[in-house]
Amino acid sequence: MAMPRMDLPWTVERLERLPDDGNRYEVIDGKLFVTPAPRNSHQRAVIELILLLAPYAKACGLDLLCGPFAVTFSEHTEVQPDLGVMPRMPDGTFAEKFADVGRLVLAVEVLSPGTKRTDRTIKRDLYQDEEVPEYWIISLDSRTVERWRPDSTEPESVTTAMQWQPVPSHDALSIDLVAYFLAVFGE
Image (cartoon, rainbow, N blue to C red; front, side, top):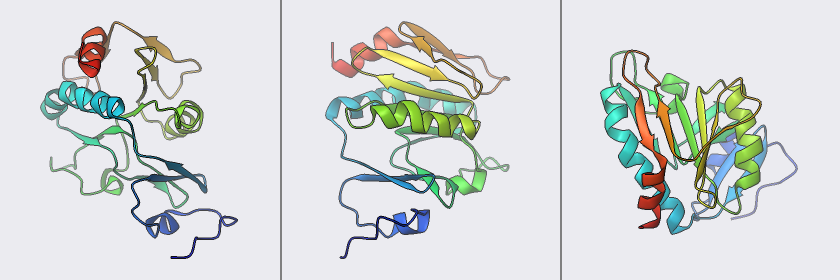
């Protein structure tokens, strides 16, 4: 297969024609981003977070998804967060694709050596511009969660515990980050 021309702006349509080679391909504002397969600690961090969030998301009527899954904001912007939470359809069923509901309630990225700059700048700006209510950047190195909201100019850096309440009619979920990171590292 011939390599696509790199000088043209990337679109979601061009992205969909790339081969499935184990890499994660995303396009943001017409620029292509390629990420290699994540490390095991990265995957454990995602799994442990799913275990914490899944019962709560279900009780709140939200749909919790783990990457890769496509979040298409425009014909020139499609990302694949490590974890995302979307509302359900008006009838309470799960959306088949992001476009069916068109918004995220939460986006989560676990930092990897190759994604730190993109996750902390480009994706953060994107999620804030798209008014995603919360964007969490998990750093395994520092055992912190950087919490961003659409109007944040600096992250809330959380190390011990945090509350998440995406649906005001439900009590907040308390997340013990110390226990979370201990589980991620098998300590």
